[in-house]
Length: 249
Image (cartoon, rainbow, N blue to C red):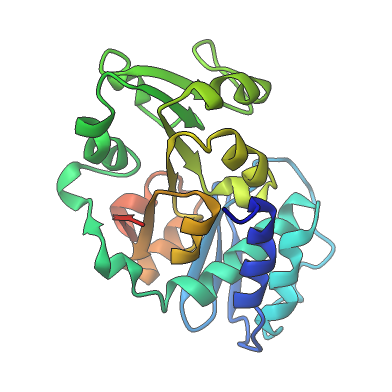
């Protein structure tokens, strides 16, 4: 297996283009980059009053913003990830090779509904507290690891202990932008590993990093998606602008 740190070099290779940036939107929950297509990344969730580069990003070559993926500034890394996704996801053939999750319900829950026959009764670790996850508590031995843990969640540090014991791990693709991806993938190497979420680049290369399944989105209505992001929408993007697909690598 290729060392998971190398995912960043791979993604920057894909982002090494002169495609001009048409628009960047940094919403409360999602950041959107539009070029010839649209890329998403979950917004940092941190508070800031100003960003020094505001008003300067349109018409820049994509490769300039893609390089921000290496940044430790969370807003820069988020924009870099969204830019790379705009380059990759509008062209990738992978979603069409997978299965649409529309019949399984709305949003992120569709992913868990799809996998439920495979994970029922298993030890399952989920990175990130998705809305309404509690409905599955009696279906599996579920642990949720969250950066801002609630009463039923485990903190980040618990990953070191819980992921090696898990049979299945659901890993948010936001871990790429926030730089936790390499360590989490290493810890989950003995599990069935699902990379999921709108931040996910549709790349078959993830197989060499130990990912078994991709569960990501395609844009179904770009205008509605843009409006929802701009107006601070969160899970509402699943109702207005994107659709989930899953693919076994």
